[in-house]
Length: 270
Image (tube, rainbow, N blue to C red; front, top):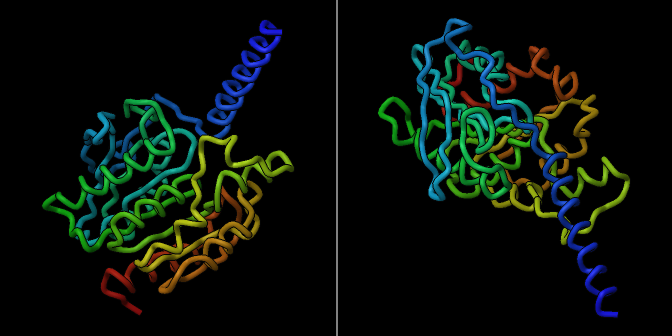
């Protein structure tokens, strides 16, 4: 009987380990190799390394605009690394905004093991770094989170509550995403990752813009609508044409985004 009990607990431990491994591999898709830099698309940039309070070494790029008073803090999605966001970096730069984009630990040249708590620490450290720069106005920072970066940006906004927040193509929680993927709601106790943006966004007091593509098949637009409903004013919602990856092709997307940014932390020109 003792041997059977031991085998039973070993099997439970193995199942638990495989579940955690499966969970991580379905959330994070990091790539280490930097494919290109802003210099390759004609932009000046500063290559930056900084350390989090738990010792992770994080890599980021600061891309200045010619007359940039506003800085975009870019929390990217779960795949690739910062080198795969050059197109959107160029657009933000053309709009006249500085951009600071960083890789979470385990992505690109950032060191450490990626985790939910780790991504929150990375974002907070990135924020603290840029507001201390002499060429950044600390009150004019736009926290921008795309996809997985949305819950990370929301968490950051609850901690700093300065500037403005934009979430694009983001989800409500890992539990809700797991239900979409597997058709069942996995108990929260079985998951080591939450990314519970829905419960956190109601704590954000700064102005917020929720953007979602109406034909997003990866993260349904209902997630964006629920985030908006839970958020407290001031808040805005924009239903963009396109889906998860082609949302940037919507010219109205950029008009809405820039009008929101300029209206709250810039000089609005109508």
